Image (cartoon, rainbow, N blue to C red; front, side, top):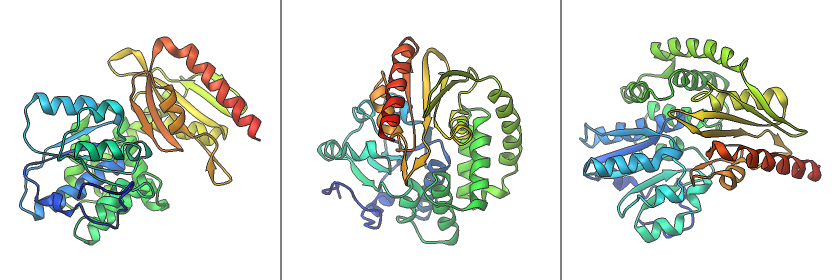
Amino acid sequence: MKGNKEYIDSDEIGLKFIFDLPNPIIITHGDVDGLCAAALLVREFKLNNKLEVPIFITQPFSLKHVLKEIKNKDMKGSLIIVDLALSKKSLEQLSSGCVVIDHHPSSAEFIDELNKIGVYHLIDLDVSASQICGTLVTQTKFNMYLAKMGGVGDRRIIDKRMGKQAMKVSSAMSLNPKDDAFRASIIADLVAGKKISEMKEVARKSKQAFKVLDDVKETGEILYDGDNIVVKFYENGFGKASVLASKLAVITKKVAVVLTLMKGNNNQYLVTGRSPEENGKPVLDIRKFVSELTTSGEGGGLEKAASCTIKKSTLGDFIEQIESNDKAIQDKR
């Protein structure tokens, strides 16, 4: 089924055929939702006698590089892209027969292009990627745990107990943002039926990460502090930006924007934003903001939480855009 609708609802489980695809290759987001979604798919593939499923873990702004890597390695297989917001750059790397399972608005904006290319897609903006994958797999108790945990991790489902476990995973992964081997080990444990609360390495790394995070928080430099938006730069914040932005938004009750230097590229900033809600809606549409801001064509997320990259040389223009958005929010009030 090559989506003939603008959106394919996740209860239309027309992508179950993917478990019959030869040589599946999964590319997933390196957050809680992405890991749970990948684990759900791998568990189902194993039921279909596909015991070895390569998994690539990445971020939306790096998806194009992973797609190039797979092409350069001449890996033959059926690509399944999960929980990764598409961009124009990554779209250029897709070919007929790929599968996209996602919940980000930016991916939904490319429905026409996906159809033209011949990409199978299951996109539902109302739930997490794990919840979508949960509709495709065998309905076991543990699979439903994974679907819910992914939803909790993406704040689509509110559950305080599971929320603490999701936060543990996020903080543990922030200790070394490039440690995809650790992320892969979490997926392997989930595939094996181990809950996050049972993962000793996650608990150990999480404790370490919170200590590091406390130290990093003290080093932040305020670049802008307006009536409705606060911008802070953390020199050593890469991999921790999401947590730092979330905490900053809670503390200041403002739209929080965190800048960190990209790992291995001191000429680029990673920009991560979080928006509080007012009357049930985000004060600022962060996704739209970063899509207008990015100088690389890479970025995306949700209305309340999104990221992008910008050139370091454009910092002055960036602050001007922040001021303009701050004024626009104030004028609406």
